[in-house]
Length: 280
Ligand SMILES: [Zn+2]
Image 1: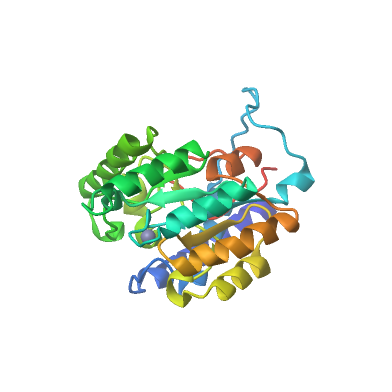
Image 2 (image 1 turned 90 degrees about the vertical axis):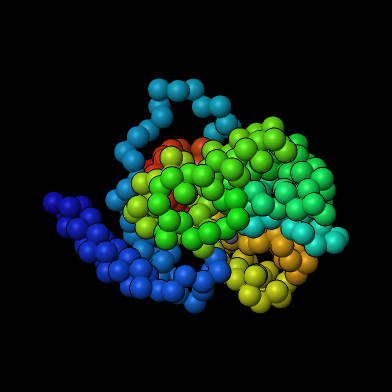
């Protein structure tokens, strides 16, 4: 009974927040309104987490203790591979490789097609896969899915997935919607789990490595999904600072798949996730 009341109140709050967010003008990836969006989705996650425990299958990943789960986090990079020189995406990969850290790159298909960058960026996506990074689908050219129909959304995702698979040999099986689009019609159209974030560095806005570093170090905790963009040199600078600092603090940087696998939380199509949560 108590739980029912809690769930109903969570739904009511979520509905109110979703209405408020729906009236927001869509802005690049992260805006001042983002905390509302995050709260709404985190509330919803409480009632949409599937009641499934994969006990019938043998674990393929190492089992993590309760304490270990408090130290697992996923860093994610959107919009790349970058079209700058030197490549900020490559600089980020260099740092991750140096520290044996993993991350997830939500790639835009169009960045594998520009005549001046096609070959270089194809090689970069291949390197991402070879280093054990996860590659997710961030659409072909970054439209707002909330304003599109199902077939258009899927054309965007398929076109990007084809390019990513051709470059890396791996077809992405998770999606990050451009601008974090999450309306119900959008989710209904996407036959993949949609991975959002709960720590927004605003790196695209500040282009300030120290601010990005502070945002992460002040807010990080187990299960976090951190949003950055591999398009900027300032972000690559921040990564050089923050990766060793997180490791020093005992954190283990894993991919989205590894994070949710460790938490025993299944990733389900047509649902969105802001962070990994313990399964009681
Ligand atoms: Zn984006």
